Structures are given as structure tokens and as C-alpha cells.
Image 1 (cartoon, rainbow, N blue to C red):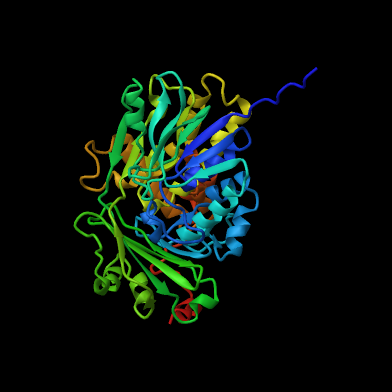
Image 2 (image 1 turned 90 degrees about the vertical axis):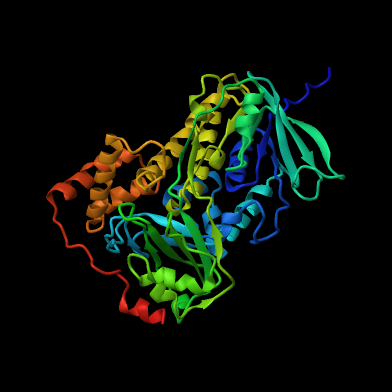
Amino acid sequence: MPEPLPARRPAAVVVGASVTGLLTAAALTEFADVTVVERDLLPEGPEPRRGVPQARHAHLVWSGGVRAFDELLPGLVAEIVARGARLAHIMGDMVSRAPNEIWFRRFTSTHHRNLVCTRDLLDAAIRARVLADDRITLRQDTTAEALLGDATRVTGVRVRSGSGSGSGSGSGSEELDLLADLVVDASGRGSHAPTWLTGLGLPEVTEREVNAGVAYATRLYRAPGTAAERDFPLVNVQANPAKTPGRGGIILPVEGDRWIVTLSGTRGGEPTADAEAFADFALSLGDPVIGELIKCAEPLGEVATTRSTANRRRYYEKLPRWPDGFAVLGDAVAGYNPVYGHGITVAAQSALALRKVLRATNLTAPGTARRIQRATARPVAAAWDLAVGQDAFYPGATDSPPTAVERFLARFVDRAVATGARNPRALGALLDVMSLEKPALRLFSPDMLIPMLFGPKRPHLDAPPLTDEERAAAG
């Protein structure tokens, strides 16, 4: 009697080898064989690539993302640190001025540690780890063009490969259909999912944009003096929405004895690509500490700029109908003002949410894709509320002014920040929320409310809490 044929593993296609796409592919390997479709030709190591122009600017991964990394890929964070990244204690290893112009004390009693390195190193480490899995097939230089299927079920994706340019056209290109039980769009801000879905006969997705008009300028420096020989703190001066234009900046010490310095400004106060004006702009911030620290540092290369910073969200989870076999994750759902540093953390938490759904529900079962879309909307919403709660107050950021509830919450968050800046118990609660480890209700816990209402209230700092040794190290 012939032996029964082995059961076929489900097939999944992930569109985009972004951080979201790679972490999603890693999560899916437990349940399916995965094909990752990527427009670019990926570099071998920590090098720039065309599809990630924002990689030049300052990036960090909040502690909520660090935890998600190691849940998805145990040991990944240690691998990245071994390659030169750093787990920085927040706020012990950080000198930070809040949007309400209050300096945080450098408490070391919280557990929060953020992963700090260049985006190129982060991407390279994730690529190397994820693509080593033989259950994942990478199709580079391949553009996703359309979904296959209908309004009830997506059955795959049509792609064009071999163009040599990532443009999806050319004499050497080939069109083919990749069949799949699940297609995940992780193609980023330029996602075509809204058009794809209406092409299948589904309704248009509701979108919202809150655009503070922020422009970024970044320059790389050699760490000055002896700063590279010690764990020099991150230095962050946040913009104040109550004052326009809002200007801010950050020094991010990264691998290779370098500092990434990113400056930002809203409409009417944007930084430019003028290298001669870079340090002067830093000196013009609400506190000149960043300008003072870089004025004697050696620049490495020119100034890179970007204006693609709007908060933009698509509410896929609210569509009245959703096809089986399709999900949208990461920046394709919501992109945030990069100043809040939440995009990568949301990507990792969304991949975890997808895995949790699939551990409870069969990948091919009716309704599974909708459960994924709703589950992954939760980390998206948490980051969205934090970003919009600040940016909505800039002139011209949104067509609809902040509601009474949003104004109340903004005032409460200002009080929470003021309390956390001088009380370690309250700071722990604030960082739990900012790191996306716990929901915003944590701000209304006794750890925050008791210090807020009853103290003891230490005086606020009137200058950045850099030690004499740190200042001397930076020359």
C-alpha cells in the first residue's frame, strides 16, 4: 500500500524586505514557506540602499522593540550589539530635554534600554539572520504589481522580476504569478494596497494625515576628543509644539566612533543641506548644547535632508469587508514622524501580533487575515496616538483642530513629563508608555498619579545634565 503524501505546508508571500517584511517573514516560518519579494538589490553588509533613504538619519529601537526582537529571533539583539551597537539606558545614558522644555534627570532605576546603532547596521544584521532560514526564499529586483484573487480571497500576487532596476519594467523583465495562502504587504509608505483592494471591488480605506511640516537634516561626525573611548550619552533637544517653528535635534553615538547628528524644524524653521549652516542651526535650538558639542567635531561627509515626515495612517481594520489571505503591516499601514522613533518598534510588535494570531488560528482558515489586521492595529494605534498627540498642535498639521479630549490629554501628558523628569517612579511609568511596552492607561497608575499630586517634588534642572567629565571628553 503506497505511503500517504506529506501534507503541503502553506505558502506565504511578503512584499518588501523592509524591517517589517523581514520580521514578518521570520514570524511566518513557523506556519508556512515564505517568499520575500523586494524591488531593490540588497547589499551584502551594512550599506545604504535605494529603498531606505531615511537610513541616513538617527534611528533607535525603543525597549518595547528590543523585547520583541528577542522574542521573534532569540539572540538577535546580542548579535547586533556584538557588531558595534549599544543598549543605552534611558534616561541614565541620555541627556534629554522634553517638548515642554524640561530637562530629565538621569535616573538609572528604570529597566528601559534602547538599541542604538546606524540603520544600515540594523538592517544588515536582521537580513543576515532572517534570510539564513531555508524556509525563506528571497526574490530581489522584483516588483509586486497586483493581487490575485477577488474581494473574498487573495490567492497570490503578480510580480515582475529581472528588470535590473527595480522599476518593474525593462527588456529583460519577466512577469509571473506567485500563488500563496497569505500575502502580506510590508512595502512601506509607498504601498499600493489601497489601489489593489479597490481593484478587487473592496471599498476605499479611510486615511488620516497629520503633517507638522517637519524637515530633517543629518550629518555624520567623528566623535570628538575622547568621547569615543567612553559611552557618551545620547543628547536630545525636543521641539516644543507651543512655539513655532518647532526646532529640535539629537546626537546619536553609533558604531565606528561616530556621531549621527540629526536636526529638525517645522514650517518656517527648517534646516537645509548647507553644511556651513548646520552647526549654527544646532546652536539656535531651544538649548545650544548640540551645537556646542559638534562645533569642534570633524564632519564626515555632507548633509542629508528629507521632508517625508508626515504621520499618515490607513484604517484597514475598520473596512466593512476584508479578503481572506491578505494583510498589511508596518509603514504601509501607518508612518510616523521619525522624531518619535517608533516605526521599527511597531514593526517588531506587529510581527509578534501576527504570530500570536497564527498560533491560535490556522493560517488558511476563513477570517484569519482579518484577525491579523485587527491584532496588528493595536501597536499601530499606540504609536499613532503618541505622535499625533504632539504634532496635531503645530499650525497647518491637520484639517481638523485638536478636540477637547485631545487637548486635555496633551495637558495631562505635559504634567506626566514634568513629573517623570524629576521622579524615578513616575519616569518608569512614562517610559513604559513611550517605549510601547504598556498602554497609555499606565500614565494614570499610582506610580504616576501619586508623585504628580503629592510629590516630593525635586526642582527641575535648568541646564542639560552633562557631567564635567563628559564635557571634557567631548573637547
